[in-house]
Amino acid sequence: MNNEQLFGNIQKKGSFLCVGLDTDIRKIPAFLLDTTDPMFAFNKEIIDATAPFTIAYKPNLAFYESEGLEGWRSLEKTVHYLHENYPDIYLIADAKRGDIGNTSAMYARAFFEKMSFDAVTVAPYMGEDSVKPFLGYEGKRVVLLALTSNKGAYDFQFGKDDATGEKLFEKVLRISQDWGSSEDIIYVIGATKAEELEGIRKIVPSHFLLVPGVGAQGGSLQEVARYGLNEQCGLLVNSSRAIIYASNEEDFAVKAGESARETRDEMFELLKIKGLL
Image (tube, rainbow, N blue to C red; front, top):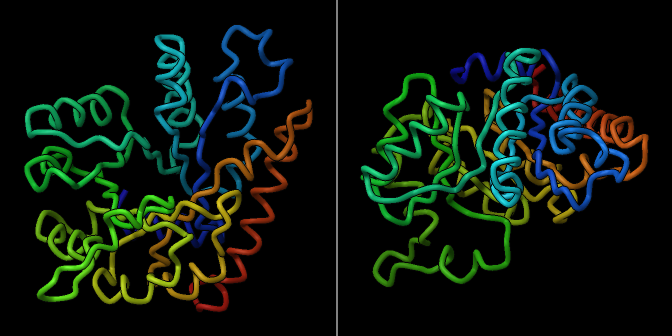
């Protein structure tokens, strides 16, 4: 799915919402534990309730890996269900991979060939040769970590070059553009660092940004839109806990759908103000 197609879906739904499927077996409603596959049962209900308001889903691999083989099966069923029933929705593997070239090639094969994700999150710390194998798949994308939403981002990502004053995350944005284009690289920019978006857009004006941290982590959707929207929207704003755990009762899917709709409605207005609808 290229930028034009992604923007078309955003315009069609009036939304740039990405729902994080951070499915924790310890948090899902207790009655689902009696089903044959509780994680998939939860995901299926969440997807059906939120899909009308959602552009992308982002399963966090840690929640599935933690359950061993059963978790991987749940993830595989989730991916298959999305492809079969909602083929226009973008699917991101939140895996945060990145290793020497031949290892990255195996990761890329796993997520793009075997599991048919559209994109995968990758850490850039090991440099170009650790990212390039993910960029060798037509129509697939790397979601490169640039400026994250956690407190630890200040440990390294804001470190400045003594000679130029350039911050480390700015260097990642600048250099990595030589590895690919706005059609195959998306950047992770945390919503809790929204004040940096104006400067970030000067470095990467055309790329899509995956923005976590809205909702439970306290990021402001209005601030993200104010500084991050571009002429093709250019944003996929992720919300996980605030949507999928809106309720822990039998109405969990209904409440998730309501939360997703409320977020979509807010996004719709922001897109209208920007003249994108």
